[in-house]
Length: 303
Image (cartoon, rainbow, N blue to C red):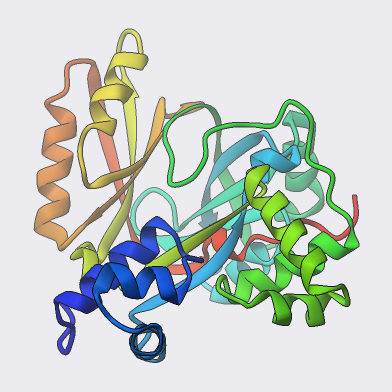
């Protein structure tokens, strides 16, 4: 737990995790504080980097229905190569890891052909990066955000993009600020933001300091499974420290994201996973450095 936080701070954080754009009036009523006092508390939490409230775009609602995890080795151990890979528009997550792979890179693509094009035109053009394995997701059992895909990709125009870009930096931006940034009226900005939220294109996420959740040690855990994968993945999803569970095609049958307090906690979780009937083996890749998180993913400017 971070020092200097009291019970009201913790309750405010929990309220914001439920609704990052809740008004200061509503938040204050829940905390038995005035709107101004609530605003001051939130600003201090943001200044101290305890919380960040951001807008996150949902790729699936924009037609990006296929995800893949790349297990990567570096021919030369230069971080610059991974920085270049992380900057590619189809990459929504990149991290240095320990183990079989020097890094893991997650792709957000339209389809298999898009994956191949991203590899050929992007990843493989970075000389120091060697793609060892490509694990294509076929089932998302547990996911940090929506699991739904749109029947038809949501239509996003230039004005929507301006709103999304602004909200990505400040998920609680006022409609007046959004109107100014996008050169539209306040009422139009409000209507468009509500539409983006209702259609599932945008969600407001409250990102909290790892010390709050007491889960600062992160790793990707790959599974090999014997027999049907569905019951195994369902059991994995029941473990609280497992934040993501996806079935994959490739060397491994599943990719899990796990967050614990420390290395000992990670070991305990992997032992739980190995005890699940049907789990033939696990391989753990501790995250050493994160170069790109999904909240930094931006809908490509042009296709």
